[in-house]
Image (cartoon, rainbow, N blue to C red; front, side, top):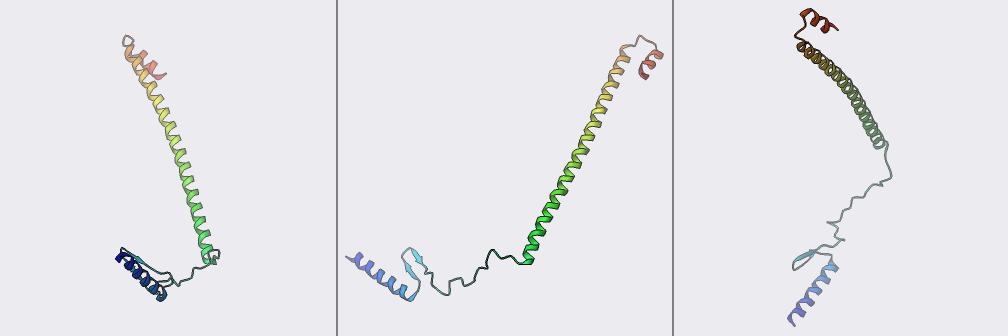
Length: 125
């Protein structure tokens, strides 16, 4: 019986607060009302479709800058790829020349029975 009486008192206090638009504290929670003028946000949102000239120019300028940056990056990547390919080609050519030189040197040392003049002639070829 006492719990029913407490619930009835709580409901009556809640109704009074609703009429006066005050905050009412329930045990364990706090209720806020949307119509409280001091808590309500009175700032109006601007229309999102409208874009003034400065904003439009800024957006277009940002897009242009991003496009230029992307083009510069792509150019740098391509030029670095070309440099890498040419350096790789030079390295391969040098490796082939070195291998030929080592093989000819090995041939010279294996022909130690020949005279020095014939070894020099083989080396010049």
